[in-house]
Image (cartoon, rainbow, N blue to C red; front, side, top):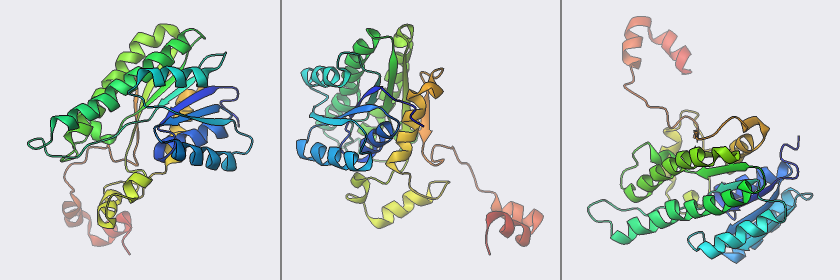
Length: 275
């Protein structure tokens, strides 16, 4: 079912990973999509892949650095056309690993500028377009790191937490114009940035920490974007939606041993799934 037919969407960081998955799902549901990012070759290749996946879809690409306001203004205008922008997926963002006692000031400035200031600039200009055309949906992309401490990633986690508050602030301010603003907080998603930069052991640990026992796919974040941007989400704003396989669930002590004492190994093995 084409839930977004005729809608016009802008996806920042749309050439790879989560952004690509979001663009794919938007296209599959009938939206016209402009993907933007800093690397033209990556965007061109991604647009070609998207056209191959959704031959009937309308997709274009444009170079845009979200920390450059003129770039954002140009991208919003291109995506909106004459009828205004309907959907913004503010996905572009990055991190900077480093311990608090050693991380350079540049690490904090980089993450603040990209994750907060750049996203705020996108919300500003997308919101202005939507305001003039009856409303729309803005979806920011955060991380479970905004609420769950990820050691040695303070600049990233801190600015993602700030992004979530930015989302709530924007939801309140833009609500009178029928602009809904929500946030998706992904867990471990199987993207190039993970597979190319981390060891197999680290990735196995991520899977082990995920209650559903697997990595998420970029398109599953896209499914949540479609839900929030279609009529299904028309009464939803200011929310942080975890798309994380359960990683955001606060877990306490495991009382398996006590239950084995009370109910026996056979029952517990059957419950846990051990053979």
